[in-house]
Length: 285
Ligand code: KIV
Image (cartoon, helix red, strand yellow):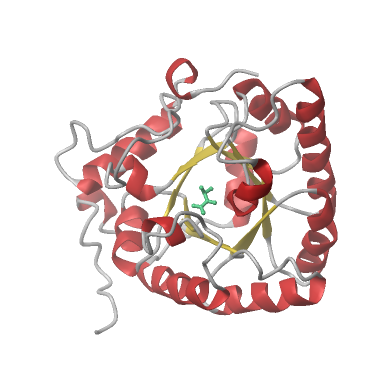
């Protein structure tokens, strides 16, 4: 297959001129000025190009691809080699969006040396930032990556790689002790140098509280409207994923005439604050 064409085929006339690249500096400025950040998952070149052309700020090559693309029941079987492959595909399709790639299960649990080697592989495939799950024990890994010039996104709350330890895909941080634990972990990861933090499936008040106190950029998924940005799994918000979806998902295909229209609707809804609607998509403490 040939290299992707340089003209924007998906986004309509407004997307014909490529956007200025979204940088970490720009994302920090967006946080500071209160402009919400729109992130979606992408696993292949064509969807990466479409999302980029539709104004999505950040693409996440999530290990959710294990469930979405590969049909597994969890993210645990995904390998580093597979993440490198999908990251390279997305990087070839993307032109401007900030590209985050997940360190999969088993690629950093072995400690700093393993984590650095795994993160290097993702960065060489085209990632601009790597994401890893968990608090506490990951802080030295975050610090080592940041010291080596690798931007890091942390991930707290529901961390799907720990699904068996957590007893299922359930809301985290409910009750004062659990909330205080997550707040402390977030601060520790911020001090270690994480520039971005995904908060998944936590009460809206906790998501907002951490976002107000945290020095970096928070991106929520089922974490209420108070985070600096939002992320959804692309196949969930396009209603491709079969079966019942968690209540934090909104079907953006409903009423849209095309995938591009649905994605532009998502970007608009995140930026205007219309999504998420805490009364519909949020969780109480
Ligand atoms: O793998 C993934 O897609 C993720 C998001 C759900 C945040 O980690």
